[in-house]
Amino acid sequence: MTSQDLSVYISDFFSYAYSHKIELYNEYSLQHELGIFLRNKCPNYSVQFERNTNFFGINTATVKQEIDIAVFDKNEKFAIELKFPRNGAYPRRMFQFVEDICFIEQLKNIGFNGGCAVSLVDNMNFCTKQGLKTKGIYSYFRVGTSIQGVISNPTIKGPKQLTIKNSYNAIWNSTNFWDRDKAADPITSVPAKYYIIEI
Image (cartoon, rainbow, N blue to C red; front, top):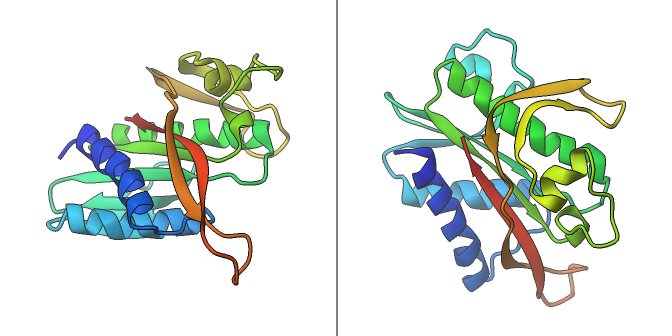
């Protein structure tokens, strides 16, 4: 398997979730529904959630310690990092998008075969530039500037800066997902965008 194979499976998941009316309402629902889907697509691999890097014998410092979804067998290891922000907080969440890329790069440098950084948004302010800020952290996700080099944290939480060794682009794809406002409400189709960055 390759990171590209994983990317194809993840893209297929969004179509599958919509056609099968699977509700996605927060990051945990996305994580678990995607994991279940991947178990069916990759029956010869273990698909596990929130695995600590120590499980894989990693003692080197990384920007994060918990892998959202680990896909592995005795020969290969892949990491999937997910973001599904539903409450704005653009600069902080955008920096977390970058942190996911950095984390998978670090894992790859110390023994993983690769992985994918995935973000799903239903707030188009994450990915549109019209009338919004387009410099600094915003440029990577609203303009399409390559994500690379030293990237500074625009907020006071988290590391002050991250270094991305390779170059990546957040290419947004259109999709829809199902959700409801209250338990008694019928599910409704929500327009959204997502990107998958292969590392």
